[in-house]
Length: 126
Ligand SMILES: [Zn+2]
Image (cartoon, rainbow, N blue to C red):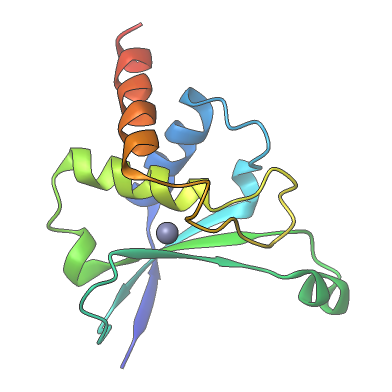
């Protein structure tokens, strides 16, 4: 059975990345972070969920995203790999912050993640 728990450690990292990488289109208070355990998925480290427009309408809620980390895989990554994983998930959020997603193709690749990760490390030092 899947279990979910709020993940304050992930939230702290995500907020830091949003701030340091100047992701102005991402609204930090509407990005929630959860850790799941008991996932059968063996390849997934993390995933992002969006509250789509029709749900926003029906529930009368603003746009929100949830970044879920799969405890069995995420927790054993190095600090650096965790950071890159969160950069990857944040890159799925479109400029409109609409509740939808940007695809990998054209928006997310290893090179971009490496570059942004370097920026993150440099900003930490400055
Ligand atoms: Zn992805």
